[in-house]
Length: 126
Image (cartoon, rainbow, N blue to C red; front, side, top):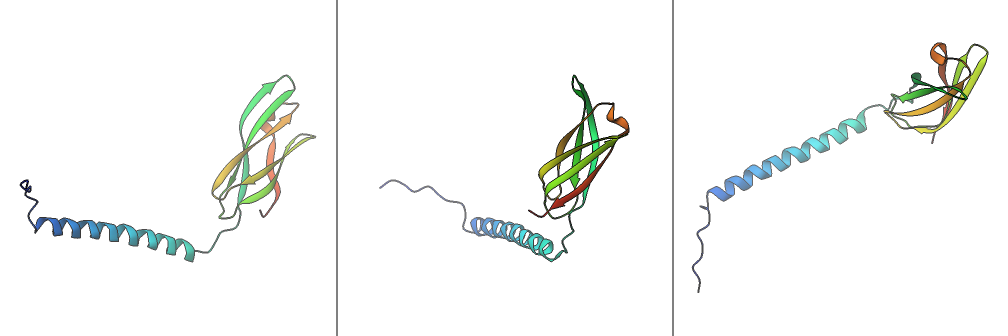
């Protein structure tokens, strides 16, 4: 019969096990606390804003990249964006903008769109 290797002293193993159990309990209770806290917070409605973040010149005119940001807790679907430059109006529709996220749309203008105004005209609930 082969000789058995000596294991760690009996007092060391339980202390390490208690320490790991305590760490696990803290992590678990923290996660549960965060979930409960988020569940008790009142939801904020969709809050969309739009702004031009880039402009590119093409053979067909100028393309403005519009960033639509949602600071609310609800996702917005079928988001309508409108850009106005003088008497020219350009529109785009985004499929959705996630809660606390953003999406990009592109508007084409004949002139330089640096002076264009962009706005979110409407959306629906997904």
